Image (tube, rainbow, N blue to C red; front, side, top):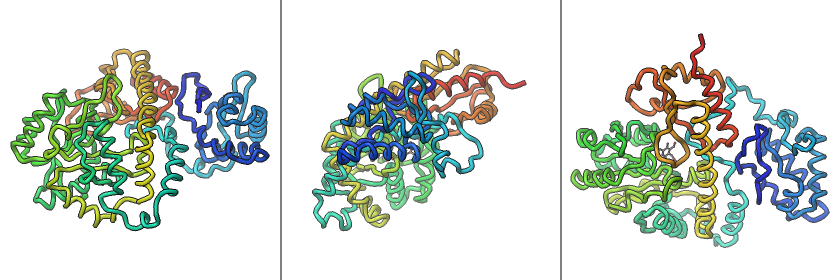
Length: 481
Ligand SMILES: Cc1ncc(COP(=O)(O)O)c(C=O)c1O
């Protein structure tokens, strides 16, 4: 379905994100009820917020063609909802979701009190949830429900449904160069649960401290802590985790994000990857690979996983949280053979396995090619948004510098000298309604005075919002007198 009618009022090319797919069921309504069905679906989409205020609707001809209904029916629906104030239209400028539509419709969640309204939220970590492939997922759901025997709804194998383990093993082998034996692949609730499971098993082997990247994700520290394992920060350099501090730290396990380090955006060099594995062999250590952003590289083909180079020294973890949605809570863990049984036992006692139906749906989605299509779709959208961000920074914040490889869902921007101190800058940004994260929030190093480094998440933002946010940041360069 086309999404060319999603330009924002600000005029920039907006996301391909408007969820027109949610109108698809209209096409299958009985012919006589289609007009009403379209109006109801549109009204509900605005009420629920799935069509956000300011979203431009496709031209009536375009939507009619996409839905396979007459143009008159779409025009009528637009007119009716305009009369009800859900939509507004201007002569020759198209039809938009009205700014006050949700409040007018009694959108309760929208009326909840908020301390401070954030107009642009650059905080990293979220994909564009409106890119979730609702129709394809619904089709996979129907197909899974249709084919699953009753017995499949009993307690699942704690390792995961065999068909999902097969599908994921094939996917990870093909896309990420993982050595993936389905017998060793454990389906779990995201990288978060994979990390916790590893924490428990390492704890059971007497390991009380695990190395983590500094700067790095605070999640790793919190998750290991929940298993009774402390973390030791290990600094990074421009090639990845610094090996001498790692050796000095004395840890026997270390967590890494080699594809696109979170948050610095460094991709581990080939030399650093092999030296890290050498460290693991010499010390009998374990490298935990969080394949963060491994699917999204924009300047070249993604570098394969570290695990593929030495599967007996690396525990590989990944999830659909960035490619589909974090709310699915679906991920995977492939650990060295010596750890697999203990991990499965832990998983069993933790939750008796992931929901069977969700696993069956993902299995169908992956093996039917839907997952590859989704990755291509996200890749196109996120690459464009990163380009928009870097261009906007170059134009509106001259002297700023973007670092890290062209990959993932966030970038690091160093603002010009003299824009700090950082804490004061962050406060000015918050005052202007721009939510940002400072790089230093993720690590232990003290920043250079006056130098502001931001971790800017862009994937969840429409291009016009990225430009708006960067313009607002540019206005914060001079300190108020
Ligand atoms: C670096 C990193 N890895 C993994 C996760 C957790 O991901 P999942 O949703 O797969 O559990 C997070 C969550 O914030 C993260 O920051």
